[in-house]
Length: 289
Length: 254
Image 1 (spheres, one colour):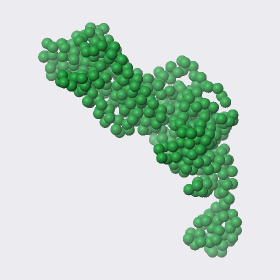
Image 2 (spheres, each protein chain N blue to C red; image 1 turned 180 degrees about the horizontal axis):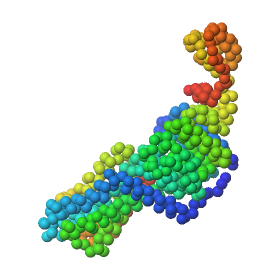
Image 3 (cartoon, chains in turn green, brown; image 1 turned 90 degrees about the vertical axis):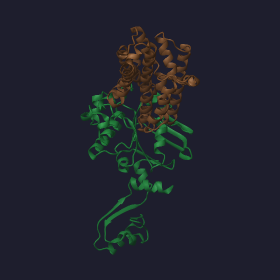
Image 4 (cartoon, rainbow over the protein chains, first blue to last red; image 1 turned 120 degrees about the vertical axis):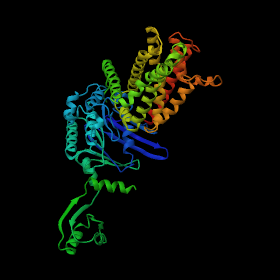
């Protein structure tokens, strides 16, 4: 394990029956970074996170957390976890759930502090089972934070949250990074990864497809996206040379725009933008299909 | 790389105590689940040993003791088998067990807390049985009542292990059915409520309920079959083997 990696998968292979979930896969988490793990459904993201959390063991290769075996309790005392599928005990009150989890960490935050930080103070006395799905996600976020973890695993943290709560989570994440924590984020919302991530890992079919900063990911895709309002039919534009459905490539851009304007005098709201993470992600994951 | 992070021993004990407290609280907050287990044994004893056969049993101390022991063992089996079986299966299905494994909470602390919760239930069952015993003309000295209660409380461990094992295999929906599949035949085939015909008495030896009943009888100096140490060894073996099998499966598959 490299000294500056706080969590690492090195050449791991993991099978579930006939399904090859990860194939010679490697990734590392550096101190103080937010690493977004992206990939389509069934790509191997959850398996990779499970191996790092010690919930499963690799068939081949190694998984290390703070230089230790991930299932060791010493390693787990340094992490916080928010799993997408996990529910908490429905009969217990929010403050009781947090108090219970806090008791297992060496230097936890006071319960009142974590309630305040995550905006869950008004829910403190309510049984977990009576909360809405968005409120449950907020409490799960509080559980993940309470141990003052050095490394936080957030699996789809903002699914089911309203805009305000999502912004609250984003703010908390940014504050944690500023305070020196590291975060591994898996998300379907590419704009979330784009807004928060220092680095991105893209997985598909159990293999590492690309890794780098968000800008580096964008640079992998050389194309421009044109949006406009026009009465021209999509089928007609897509027959033009150098046009990929509604998107023109870099070389064909001026020609295409000129032709667009020539073909439709009423065309308006024309925008030409570089590819974002979403386009980069789509292109990268389609290449290996 | 940072060295291992230590937690003081006192904090570990506090975490364990909190786990036990909250496990008990969650059960008490679901009275529909806890109520039948707490009330059923004493209610059945009152029905059979007092209301239906009270006058006849007044002249038959052995039968009334048999009934007292039978319903007490019934009270021991329920919380462990159903409590563990359903809670573990549900927590597995809802991902809570996976979260527990990812958190720095040792699985053993949770198991011990659940076992303590079951033992607390059995203690309450035995207190209710002790309270209603004289109504069926059963007058056991306080020390004997205490002794049989202790045997029953500690004797709940193998039933917790069986419930844990079923919970580690079954889904939340199927767990009650699987527990019943074991629980109901065990009540009959261990002969704790209805004596078995001589020809099939050997079947009872396969049941932990039978061995616990013999131990409970020994605790009140009543006639019992077999060596108490053999019963203790068998019950301990069931507890260890099924706990180990369930823990292994959960560690591997969650």
